[in-house]
Image (cartoon, rainbow, N blue to C red):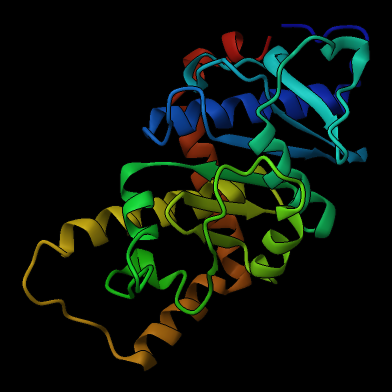
Length: 250
């Protein structure tokens, strides 16, 4: 579909990309009714980011359903007036976008396995290749109730530090990236790691790789040469919903 006249071409491209990401999160069953949220900073207007209109299920998300918002919560009135935004979504996402210029995309989920691991005292265990992507490479944030207070933003940013991903205790998962492709790759691996852990804990005894192997595997994941793989994975994921493109990009 042709973009609305008022919207900048780069913003429309971002809206279509983010709508696709919402639908992929639904495809992989990472949703929680109308809750949880994904945001994307606008490259040409870094003081603004896009987030979902509250009340639309992720599998139905379209480019026009997204809301352009600034770091103070002000909705861009020209074409997004009247759209409702999840307050908790604004608090969490605005904090990270504002604090770090390299965080362009933020994904927050409440899956059963993600929440289960967030409630386990030891957090994410280094028991799978998926989990080793986050070996000593993930942040934790204590639960403070539903994130309605902007005062929590400072603590979120402090706990996030330099990491890309964070486990929100008793709440869920958070993944970020400098691109949609990177953020999607992070949340996919983190969700899979949690699914594996929940299943593995049904066993009486767990086998752990050595710390040396854990560190080696982390470095393999962090190798800059992995970027083409991340981009290829994103394109492969998009092919799963390519028949929906005309619907989500409207």
